[in-house]
Each structure stands twice: as C-alpha cells, then as structure tokens.
Image 1 (cartoon, helix red, strand yellow):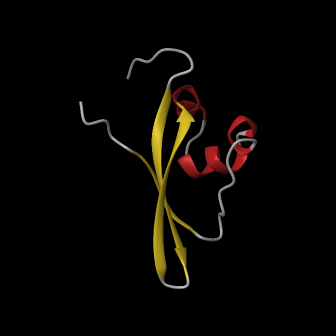
Image 2 (image 1 turned 90 degrees about the horizontal axis):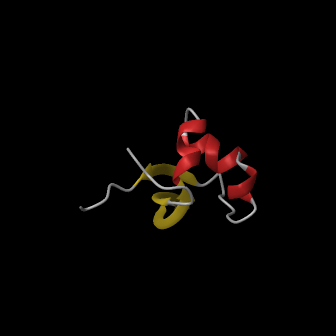
Length: 70
C-alpha cells in the first residue's frame, strides 16, 4: 500500500458497556501501522497516538482498519 507521509487511515473501534455496543471511527497515522504487530498495541503504546486519543482498553471489543471504498 503506497502512501504519502502524514497520511492517515480510519480505524473503527467498537466498545462494550454493560451489554451495549458503541462504535467510534478515528484517524491514525498510516506510517505507524507497520511498526506494530497488532493494531491494539499501536493504540495502547504509540505516544503520538495516546497524546491525541484515549482508548478505554477495558471496554474495547474490536479495532479494525476501515477499508477505503475506492
């Protein structure tokens, strides 16, 4: 997948809260995806992401890159 520096990718996060599910879509830098074996590790450990985004790991059910519709 070719991309330009600074390009982002959409990531869909699904959270569970007492039996109710709720989804959020966030942007993360595309160039960071290859640095982590798992997307959840990027969300938990990458300082440039954690400074901008809080992810409640206790409620996170799923995290997936959203495929472009092009």
